[in-house]
Image 1 (cartoon, one colour):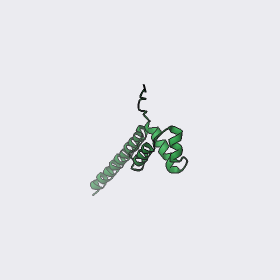
Image 2 (cartoon, helix red, strand yellow; image 1 turned 60 degrees about the vertical axis):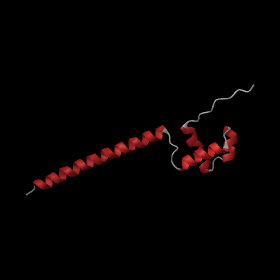
Image 3 (cartoon, rainbow, N blue to C red; image 1 turned 135 degrees about the horizontal axis):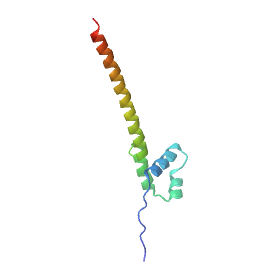
Image 4 (tube, rainbow, N blue to C red; image 1 turned 45 degrees about the horizontal axis):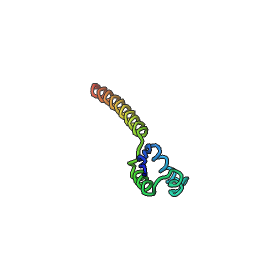
Length: 93
């Protein structure tokens, strides 16, 4: 009787790091297959996701969101400054 092992789950961070190493040439695809016991098809799928920027980490999304929020705040400050300048110019005779 054979027992089935459950599917392994890999974290987005692991997938991202593996794809970075493969794309940078630090690690070959075959080496990654042997080292982590992964199938070639799985690595190929992860690399396709990595190349199309679909492979993201929640931390990267949070950083991106924080950057966007900071940019919005800076733009709002600038709009406020320009509004005050326009009001000052309108009041001059």
